Image 1 (tube, helix red, strand yellow):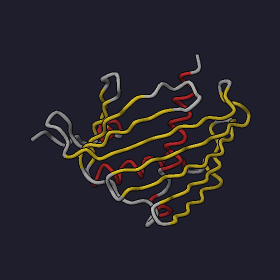
Image 2: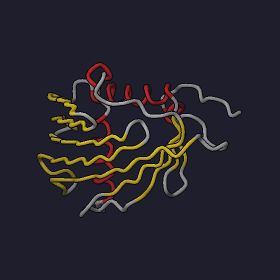
Image 3: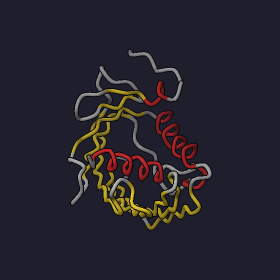
Image 4: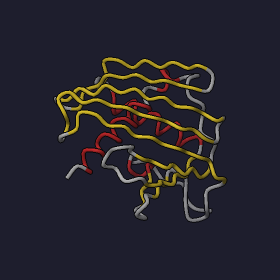
Amino acid sequence: MRFPAVLATLAATLAGLTTAPAALAGALPEHRAGLWVVAISSPGGDLPSHEVRMCIDAATDAMMSGLGSNAMNGACGKNAIRRDGAVVTVDSVCRMGNVQTTTRAVIHFSGDTAYHSDINTTFNPPMMGHSTAMVSQDAKWTGPCPADMQPGDIVMANGMRMNVKTMMGGPRKPAG
């Protein structure tokens, strides 16, 4: 089944986008606090298009940037970040076990309320039968988080809910 490989690709490329906050200082705008809807697709790939809903605040935004930093410590020999106006390009070369991943992500920001990203990754040797993967994301801030979501909550298309704060061992902000 190819779906797990694409999920691994997505995880790796997202981790590559959230490298050390110091390296990204001034390169990526902060996300506006509230509910974000992220449409994810893999043109020509195995990943079915789907949406993810995320409730974030400033602390969650910083935490998610730190997650990538911790995950990538020592794994990436190259992390180059360039900003040209509202476009940020991230090039990275990392290792996931015995697989070298080479990723280019191009992110087009519309202020702090929307972005589009195209993430292209190659695997050497191929990972689970894949030598390349492309993931596109369209993210949009839709307003305040609904009453049934708290900062850090992520709701997958199938309704599965998780909270990045509790996953990382931190306290979850109480409702209300």
